[in-house]
Image (cartoon, rainbow, N blue to C red; front, side, top):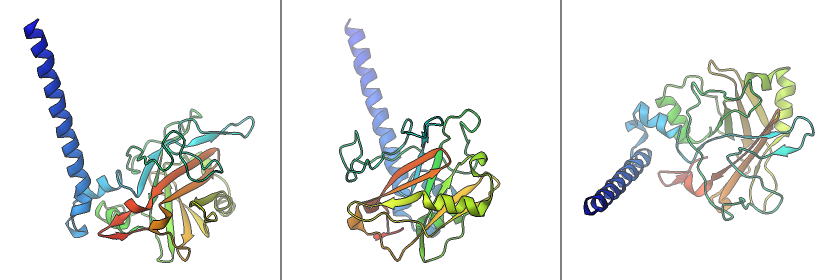
Length: 248
């Protein structure tokens, strides 16, 4: 029995040491893009940034029920506004959540033939570190962004959801999108572009930056509907800081 108890104790120590090592590795990886100047980034640094950073969210959207048109939030990575403040159910109000990774290039459009929602990736496309990471990662098909707009891009949308007349589709997508901030009027996009890429279409939402988003806003929630897909994800402004400056 003494040997058995020692074995359990040794195993526990080993597991604890392994957990500490993993946490240390994660902190080191997280610190790479924070500590390095952009010219010093490697291609892998850039790809890591485009997978795991406050400017990128990968999640499974909710879906409208086909029969009734009612909304189902099953499987969503975010939470709806619910018409009351900015509380996130089950997360203690302003609780933070960073969905898992998934670099859009080569991303599987799971569920595109089964009726299940696909996994999508949102990027705050207009942010300087995002643009720099795309250059370092040799993403030559990245959307073109001007200096007068915030831009949020959606990757991983099945082709079947973006069929039809492009102009009508873009107008419809524009009507069904907004950025929500606590205590302020919904922020609507001025335009939407549907771009064709070798790895699948990308939808880019443009919001005039004449309506400024500041650190005092704390959280900006992006809401949109694409076909039956319901997209709701939060970006935390105080974490979207690059070299001491908010980058949006």
